[in-house]
Image 1 (cartoon, helix red, strand yellow):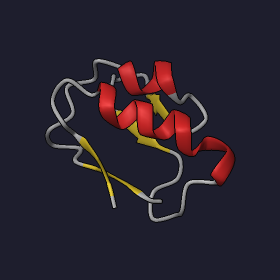
Image 2 (tube, rainbow, N blue to C red; image 1 turned 120 degrees about the vertical axis):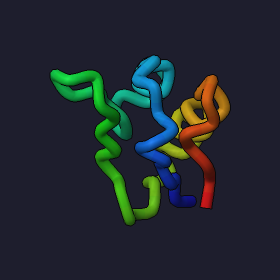
Image 3 (cartoon, rainbow, N blue to C red; image 1 turned 45 degrees about the vertical axis):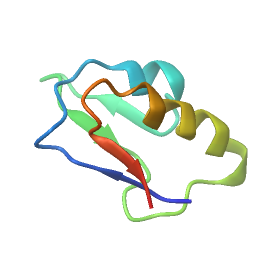
Length: 64
């Protein structure tokens, strides 16, 4: 599974970071950092990454 981030849509709520801190972070400016951009999410992180996608209130994340 890959996760695609729409950086223009992201509002920096940080719910994805709460669910999957190994995959997502917010930088000092509150901008989304996707640590696995253009990579498959490791199997051990898929469940947390899926919760992160589902938790985004502005649908800035999607499964690919």
